[in-house]
Structures are given as C-alpha cells and as structure tokens.
Image 1: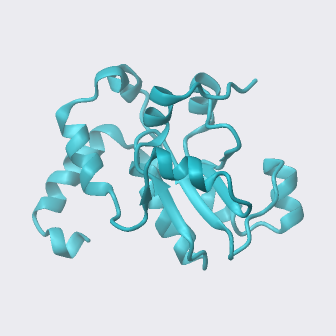
Image 2: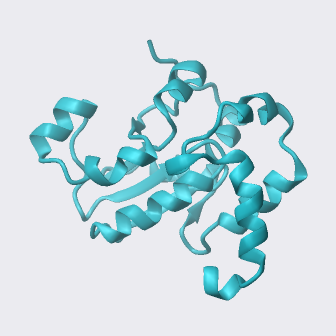
Length: 168
C-alpha cells in the first residue's frame, strides 16, 4: 500500500502520528478529541480500511451468531476499563497480538480466559475506529489465519447502537 500511495503515504503518516503512538497505542490526547474527531482523523480512518475484509455493524451482529467466530478487541487495557467492550470479545492489545496468538492453548486460556482461536476460525478485529484493527489483520494473516476481518466502525460505532459491556 505504501508503494501504491506514493507521496500520499507521507501525509497519512504525519496525520496518523498525531493520533497513534508507538506500537499502535493511542495517545491519551485522543481521549480529548474522541467526541468530535477532526476531519483529518476521518481521512486517515478511511484510507486505512482494507477493502474486502471489513464488516459493518449489521454484518458483525450476524457473524457473532455463528460458532467459530472470535471477536478480538485490540484496544489497550485502560480503554477497556474506562469505556467497556463489545460483549463476547477478547481483549488482546495490538502490541500483544502476535505473541498472544502464538501461545499454547493452555497459556492462552490462562491469560485471556477464552479458548485459543484455531486457524480455521473466523477472526474479527475491533478497536476504537478501525485503524488498529486493520493492522491486526496483517498480524493474524502473517500467523496463518486466513479468515480475518475487521469491524471498520469499531467500538465508536458500536456504542452508537448498543451499550458496551463494562469490565471491573
């Protein structure tokens, strides 16, 4: 994508750097911008969407009715504690995703209290607004998962339609 976009990639990287920190972790500053994200944020968000691998709210609701679908929220733990999560999702921060998906089934269950997704499972990644979940697709694909999607609206879109599950 960087080659195809050419010089546009430099602009996107500059805009992203305002909102995305090291390892994909959101800087605390975005919390102040969250209620009314700037037009530049939406530009970056739409450029980050991977065609053919995205699901919208209605599609996610339908997918979640099926066995073998695993919803993974790649936001940071402080975001989950402060804002909640989509019911039934597993929180694996983006920076921990590669190592987490390579754990043994026993280690994964001990750490995340859920069953390790199998390569044949459908994985759907979610984050705040679709940026980090797009990166999670690359990580999962590199580990051999080939049925991967991301919820392009993310947690931001979900909370407009349904109340999140609060954690303790």
